[in-house]
Image 1 (tube, one colour):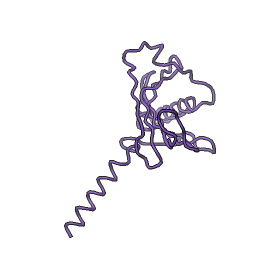
Image 2 (cartoon, helix red, strand yellow):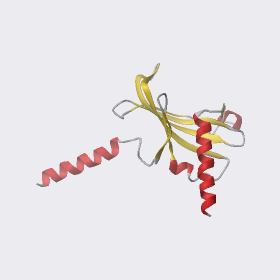
Image 3 (tube, one colour):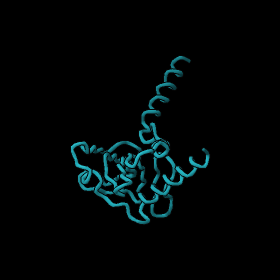
Amino acid sequence: MQKYLVIFFVLLIAAKFSNAQSANNNWKPLIIDATQRIWYDRSQLDTVDTPTFNVWILEMHRPNLSLEGISDNIMRTKTLYMVDLQRYKYGIKEVVYYDPSNQIIKSFKYDTNSLTEDYKFIFPITENSFMQKLIDELLRIRKLKESVK
């Protein structure tokens, strides 16, 4: 009986650690339609109180994404974006690529500490983009918080 109990706990622990994308994230859907499946980390967006902030975005690729030198079987990408609301731009701080079995294929961390602000936030937030929808969601959350006060 103890043998089965030990096996159960080992499997439970393995399952906990193998689910790398959900650890410490509170994923909420941002865009779910025929062409895009994108979630954001709600716990990060809930705490934004400055014009610049970081937020994790999880995107599912259908068909699987193929990037030369990385893999031709990327099913999910988890990206840590840096957003500057004053400049209305964003940049990338970290990217993690996952295969269909939820295993990390490759990850990149960019050294943004040595960059000037102009180079940290190089992408403009454009109309109808996923980032604009994220900003809209941030404004909706802020409005809800204000109405509760």
